[in-house]
Every structure is written in structure tokens, then in C-alpha cells.
Length: 258
Image 1 (cartoon, rainbow, N blue to C red):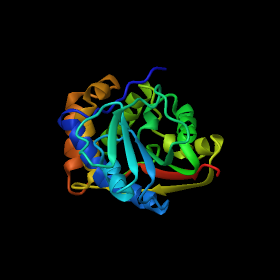
Image 2 (cartoon, one colour; image 1 turned 60 degrees about the vertical axis):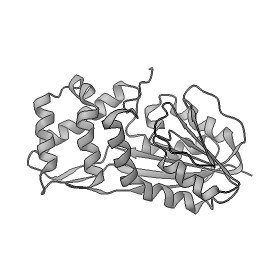
Image 3 (cartoon, one colour; image 1 turned 60 degrees about the horizontal axis):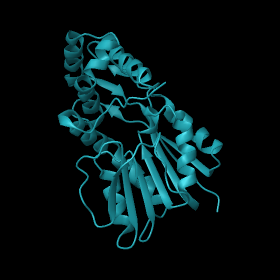
């Protein structure tokens, strides 16, 4: 299975995707990263950095003598920082230096990579002894609708999105498998922590789904939806009474043996 990334960084839908991701998940990701003790002098890698909100946070933490390498298959709008370098990099195919990083973070990128388990091993090899790997990934198997004018249509939208991602080599339920992949790669002190939020009108979690009806339109149509259904599901999600549970975000840390 070859991979095609279903989300891109360019265009208005890419910008909205990253805005919603940052609003939904940056507080979770940064709180966990801080727990590693990341500080001045650390050398960090952000895999799938997107527009760089986590890379910039890390750059501020490791200043003035540390460094952050922000790697992504596309580079777009990563603001400059004296301790941050952005590079074009495909984790599935491009090499990484060995034993270079004190901390590596990969958020919502490996689920899109068919070689995800091999990529975890590559990231472990890139850690210094005693270094930390944090992988934050969602599991879309659990995201039930709680209150909706047309629950069946919303569920059809979620199923079509899952089908589209799988057709491109992704595993949208990989979040629950991250801890096992880390253990298989030899990490210790593995600590998976699940997070669930609410989706309601005005929430960044629901805004992300709303954006997907546009950003993933072609894939959703190929998976069996129609433009009329996409317009209707937007109306369903815009209802002030709409309530649904988010997918589960698994924030998983592991440490390389010293």
C-alpha cells in the first residue's frame, strides 16, 4: 500500500486544519512535553510539524543553547525562531541521524504512514540514550454522536472519512496501538494517556470536522457521500443543540534506555 497524505498544509482548508488542531490539542501536547523536563540545551525533533505551533513552543523551552528541528513533508508558514530549523522530510522514506535528540514528538502523522511501526523504530534510533519519544495519535473508533438532528447522516460522514483514510494507507484507529509499537521498538517507562473532549457548535473539535467536509470533499464523495449530504451534515453540526464525543487522543510517552 502506497501512502498519500489526506491532509495538506496549503490553502485555506490547510490553514483551518492546523488552527483547529492547535486549539484542540496543543494544551495536551505541551503539558506532556513539559513533563519530560525539556529545557535549555535540549535537542528536539518535531515530526510532521505542520505550521509549527509545537516546534515554536519547544524552541522557546530549549533556548538559548538548545535546538529544534521541525520536519514535515510540506513546509509552510513555520515562523522563524533562532533555535528552530525547518526541513523538508518524509518520515516514511528519509533517514534520520542516529542518537541525536533528547526529545522527539510526532503528533497525528504516523497514522497516515503505512510504514508506521518501522517509523517508530527509526525515531527510537534517533534518540539519545535516555531520550524521550512522545506520540500523540487519535483513535476514531470511539466518537459517538450524543444529540443530533440527523445522527445517521453524521455517522455516515464519520464512516466515509474513515474509509477514505484507510484507502490512502492510513489507520485512523492507530492511537490505541501506539504504546504497543513503542514497547516493540524497545522503549521503557511507556505511559499512554487517553483524552476525550466534546464536539459542539463553536468548539475547535467540531470546527475540525466541519473543515473536513471541505478539505476531504473528493475523498468523501469517493467513499459514497454526495455534495447534498455534505451540505446537510454541515447544517447538522451547526445546530446549537448538536453534541458528540470526540475521538480519543492517546498521548503516549516512552523513554530510550540509558
